[in-house]
Length: 210
Figure 1 (tube, rainbow, N blue to C red):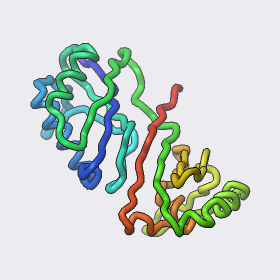
Figure 2 (spheres, one colour):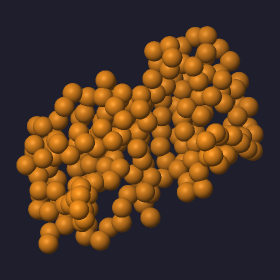
Figure 3 (cartoon, rainbow, N blue to C red):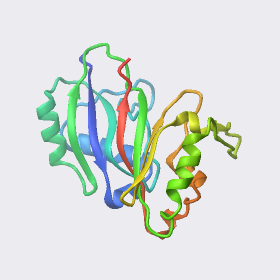
Figure 4 (cartoon, rainbow, N blue to C red):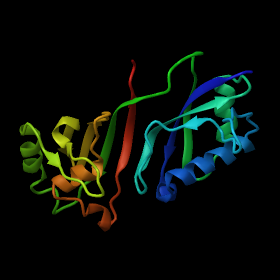
C-alpha cells in the first residue's frame, strides 16, 4: 500500500476567515477530490481522509502561511500536486507550496506562531508603554474560564513590538499551555479593536525541526 505524506502551505483570507476549522476541513476534502487525488483514508466504519492541521486557525483571523499535512494513496510530485489543487481552489484560499515528506517522518509540531494587527488611534497612543511594562516583567499570569488552566503569557511571548501602526507578536506553543493573540490584546487593553473593523493576521507558523 502506497502512503505518501505531503506538507502543504496555504493562505486563508477574505471572507473565508469567517468559517470555522471543521468547515475548512470539509472544504479541503472536497477540493482534493475535485483535483482527482487518491487520498489515504482512516480505518473503521466511517473512513476519513488522513489530513492534519498542526494548529487550527481561530475564526475571524486571516492566515498567510498556514500548514496542513495530507496522506495520499498514490505517488505525486510536489509540482503536480500544487498545480492540481491550485486549479480547484476557492476564493479566499491560495496554496503557496507543497513538500513531499520522507518516509517515516514525524507529524509536524508547531514551535511558534506570529501575528500582526493594525492599531488605529487612539489605541496606539500609550501602547508602547504598555508593551514595555509587559515585556519587562518576569511573568504575567492569565486566568481563564471554563475550567481551563491559567497560563503565563510572559513565558509564551517571544516577541512583541509596535511600529508604524502595526502590532506584531510571536508566541511559543508549549504542551503545558500557550497563549492566544487575543489574550495578548486583552492584557494590553486593546481587545476591542476587532469590534471596530480590525482583524488579526497569522503571518507565520514555524515548525519544530526536531
